[in-house]
Length: 242
Image (cartoon, rainbow, N blue to C red; front, side, top):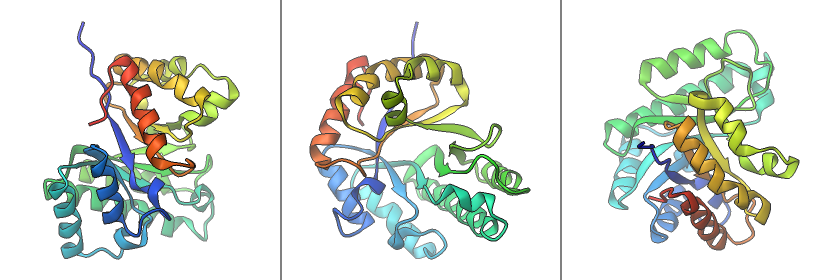
């Protein structure tokens, strides 16, 4: 039987404060042989609302010059913004703008055929939030993976660290989520979390072939060593750090 082996991308989010810019983060990732990336859409230099057509083209050119492919965007804004009438419109606008940026990067040949925008969301968004995001997702052909949101908010994003700390059988949870799983975020690099990675890769390849892994180095003390350890753990089940 043939299985689809999930890829592991690295998000530029985890390098904020370590390098000066998104382009610098992409370069850091490329220097370590990683070709699959996720761009942090909350970074000031690539914020979709402020990035004009020329800026988007320049970002795409940087990704391609480095031999990389953008598998998606991170938009981990405060989840409670989607639950507040005062902030929901702006939060939805940010997601819609991120979806548009992902579609433009694909149009410039720098992104996957079906990129995924990873969004953190509260469990009780105000009315109209899910409908507006869903319409933009369908229009532009960009998946939205929701971290912590309600059922039916899109495909699901999960963080491996909290599961590992609470003793959850991550592979079984992934099998339960099946095709609804969009993103597995490796957000901790301790022995317990990394010990779950191999089984997760195996479960994803069987139950969630369309899902991708994302290494988020935000909470790592040494980003280089954390990435190396994550890549080695991913390879246990034949995964690819591409």
